[in-house]
Image (cartoon, rainbow over all chains, first blue to last red; front, side):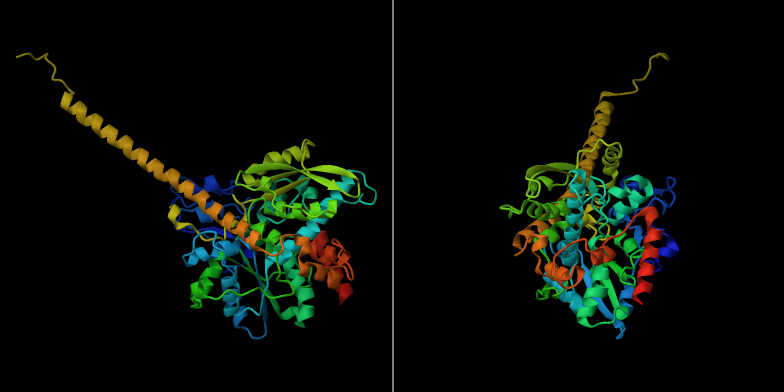
Length: 390
Length: 119
């Protein structure tokens, strides 16, 4: 593992000398960023790489690694002058257990909170809180864009339709690198990780009476691209670096093992209050279609003024790379029913056609969710590697 | 003695032996291919299991809609839009929204100016 920063290398993912040049990664890479002659160690073109780590979790020789911030986190935990705050993404809680012998999908949320407290974090919060916050901001933005498209007065400054989701940092870099014209269609709402940082260093710091300069925000993510995201220069809205360090699900498991914590026998604990409460809508963010379903639950109730009898929108679930659905939403303010057309893409390989349709004016959708990894964040590049596969 | 009488290059016994080996090779190739396909099957299966874990956790939660999270209502009323729950408020816009691509340098300038104002 390298302990250099993104600025030194230009990227998060590195091919090591263990590479056998088997070409499996070049088939998996969604952007064609990996190349190398037959029989020669492959290398990554960082101008194309979107840091998703799919090559890493699928390499049969475990020859690909990601940049590590674990040493910085361990140093900060030892420093009595620092106040460490941690957030964990939804997908971490159903995969972390695999590193300790649990079956995939086992919910170890309570043990994870307990382990983080044992590691020395002062406040154990939850990215699911800011996932709910994302729905409030991104859902409101979507409603404004729909009203603008329908010609409702007062929403003229809202962006165009369809609106794309903005949670996935691999997708954002892909769009910036390849389709600058699509950027006005992407929601301006930050990802849950990047909403958490400024909320912790302003609102929580005030309430806890902690100097934000002493606060260190750490994220536990199923994702390698989140490491790149936290180092982007614009994420300093709090006046400080919003999210200081990101560690993956794998790295948290290693830290728990290194500290000699008996994870399997830990008693379940809750997240801390203030910015640690979550809902089922936030939990499903970790699966493809989850952001869409969470947004529909809230947008439907706000637009219709009615309570949903059934909160599940099964039409948006599944593992097919491109899915679509239409949801009839009664809009109270307009006195009509609006057929809301949504699309879900999982796998950046498949997003090109969807983008071309939008740019050519052929797209019939209102809202499009894009996640880079097949299946969503639960299959992210920072998740436990399934060794039985190779 | 006939110098023109060719020796049969392929006896019946050799043919049986040869086709037997070809058959065995085909069976082995099939078995290896099946192992390969099963590896892909597992790769889908663990994704499905993790997704099922999230969906059953969702079902077990007391609150299942973002706008009903009491701490979300509290952060709007106390901090983001004082006194009311009003997303995309000025503070929310400053802390929770961003820009992309060529608009980033301008956003960083805005954030720096905001810091100077605050100081």
